[in-house]
Image (cartoon, rainbow, N blue to C red; front, side, top):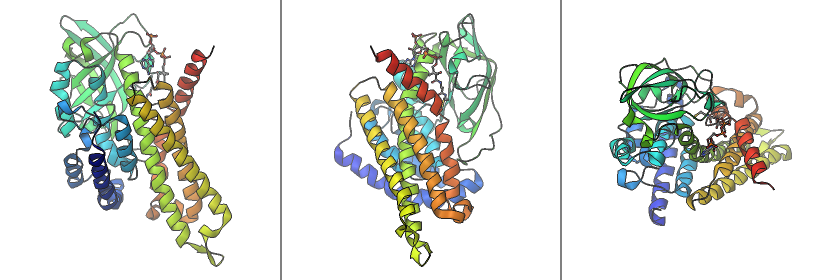
Length: 383
Ligand code: COS
């Protein structure tokens, strides 16, 4: 159910203030310490950000997609690590349960995911199964009422804090592709689950990723999402369809922020006796960035509305993710160019955002995977 217009407006006003007064001023602390300060984390919980996409009957805000992307665009203006801390609960860490879970699974986990008491992580990627997610090898061998999980999941966002993993594992040992994969809910602390050391990354410090290793981990068959064996890959794809829209909105938000910072800098910075914003070659870069941000915003809002109408938005989500993630990369690159030498120096801040933006073209499906999804769908739909 949609929020009252006024309620959404109030939420957005509050978030806008929070982003500018609390998050942006603390970006440096987060990147230097690789951690979100605990007081900010508490404020994120209080604001209900963990609850955005979880239905109201399970303690969430139950935002529509159209509402969620507006919030994601606002939050996207701050360094992406801030969004990442609650992003898995709003997206890939909860949506498999929301979309395909049983009522018991929803009641057991969603309220705690909505409050932020429990962090959810999504375990799809493996050392040998990245873009080719359907070839995953983590095995789930039936043993009476249980399954025994063995395998390694790689680059798992928020794994070090996670209390609940959605784990895609192969229940049909005879299969090698997307069929034969089931989605399991595995609680952290279950014997046989181990989280590796957080990776050192190019950017997005404060948003940890690590391996999650399963060694003879015994999980009850009731923990299969929706109690439906061999349907896990489809669940994962549905989760990503939604996640890709959310990520696109974060890209648009970050691009807006980068452009604003850059224009302010360009107005201030003087060369050849003038503000560099008065030079047409600088203006061309500003205009290209503004045009592309506007295009992304239009696509995101259109795709979100289509999803809320109940349409299949697989193609639109991939088009949007492809365009918005590539777009923020170009906007960040132009920003470094406009800042000149200062763009390469950490103290000016653009350098960090440039590195942060690089991940968007990779995670939740690379640009090349989005191209494949789009082309396959267009070709199939064309007589
Ligand atoms: N919604 C529902 N079902 C879907 C779906 C979607 N969006 N996408 C695919 N499926 C279904 C297909 O219909 C097919 O079902 P049937 O066997 O009943 O026909 C099944 O899932 C397998 O689909 P497909 O044949 O397209 O799978 P492929 O192995 O060819 O690969 C890609 C699909 C490449 C698109 C997938 O592996 C992918 O998205 N890879 C990127 C993974 C990723 O984003 N990783 C990021 C890490 S997670 S943050």
